[in-house]
Length: 253
Image (cartoon, rainbow, N blue to C red; front, side):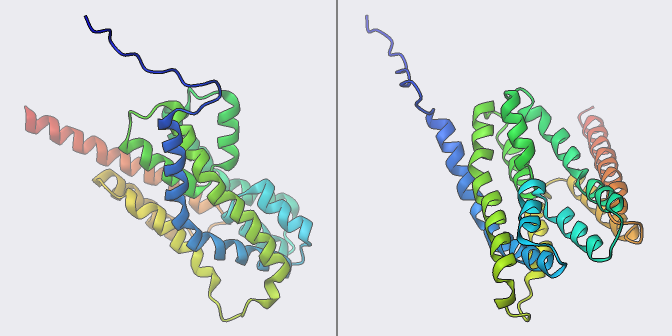
């Protein structure tokens, strides 16, 4: 009788091929975002120094906060001599979307070790969230180590250049021609993240309601309109999904 072959155990410290593959996939899929992330980071470095921040303060923003939208908001408010409490409250309001991201990723990463979840929380930005949720939904059979490895591969591509080019913008910003429209990076980044996710009616409904609500509420204090628009978009997506489920049940019955 032929003895059944058994998988050869990995040597101590060796990586599972599937985990290594997930890391490589995350790294490669994050590379296109550099086309918009680099000018975005350069722009922040330029804007922050123009607002009167020194190099240490500018880099402190990009290393400790690591969130472009709230960084720009804070710098703008500081330029307008807003009170510190207003700056902090505005930045917190804008970054509360990260709580929505975390809640969305909990079913996929909730069983990862606490130290891994803590690191993911630090590097969780719009791009890493957009990449992760698309990958996890399309490949639900991925293991927890594979999901964590995917994020670990994407993170160096997205976070380290943000810090590096913030430094370049802060130190060499005066050499960048004023005619270069670096601010195009902000809308292009979000379009690149959200467009591939519009695959179903609930996705489209959620995005449409959130965008229209944010535009309608744009006159509210900084960040407040986004806080209201986010839950409205999620509610619209949930209603659309429930409607689709009822239709499927009616058709099958």
